Amino acid sequence: MVEVTFVEADGSRRVVSATIGLSLMEVARNDGVRGIEAECGGACACSTCHVYVAGDWVARMPERSPIEEDMLDFAHEPDPTTSRLACQIPISEDLDGLIISVPERQC
Image (tube, rainbow, N blue to C red; front, top):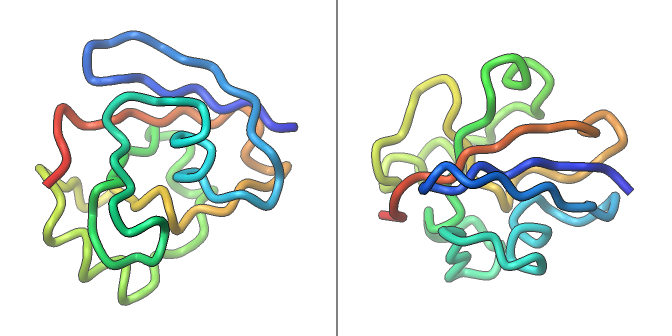
């Protein structure tokens, strides 16, 4: 298991145990993280799992695919550096300690 900290829009922090192999979106949804709607279920067909990756973690993330880049255009206040779709981030041992912030709203 990997620990991931979600900072919800109200500033509350939720530390969850994430199963390796799941997506960050699945982890957030399974643990009831507020603000992750995941309407498409992880198909990268919406932007309702938009999150911000903490600055020191950005370089450790897998690269964005062209589809993810396109979908981020529909996200609420996307940041060119830290915005990601949680459905596109697979949990691995390398992400132990990851810090993610959830936007105040999706789309």
